[in-house]
Image (cartoon, rainbow, N blue to C red; front, side, top):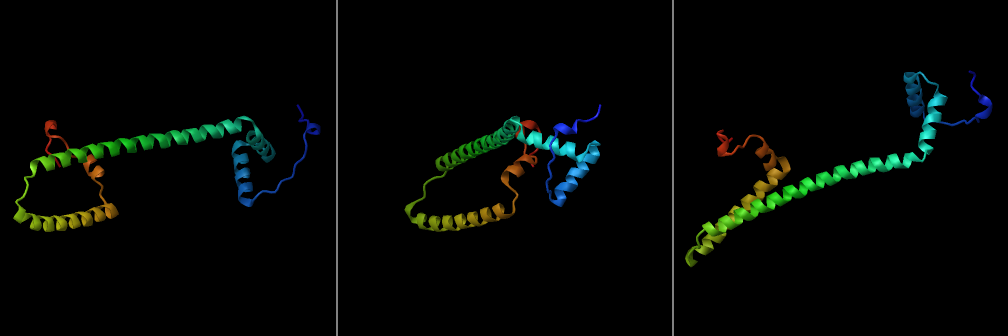
Length: 148
């Protein structure tokens, strides 16, 4: 059946060389004319469901971001609880110092804190992260496997 060219209208467009190459490659792979591929692309772009497809793609990305944020919230919550338990344990097990030893303890504590900040800075700059170390083989004593 011959194609009815009398109902179609002619359109001349100018394409960037790279876009023209992509069109030609796609047309060749599909064994279709460039005109048919361009017509299908334009029809798809102008179809009412194009907006729905774009909205679905955005919703998919937003869902992925939401799951990432939920994981981050969970991890931060675990970290906060672990830190709170450590602080409570440390405060309840550390005896008070006599008045005479407090000045020396403050000085030593300041040195330790400065050292802590230095080590933290290095780890944040170079790694490894504690979370990565945990996943590399630290097991509980109940597993029957020695800790790494």
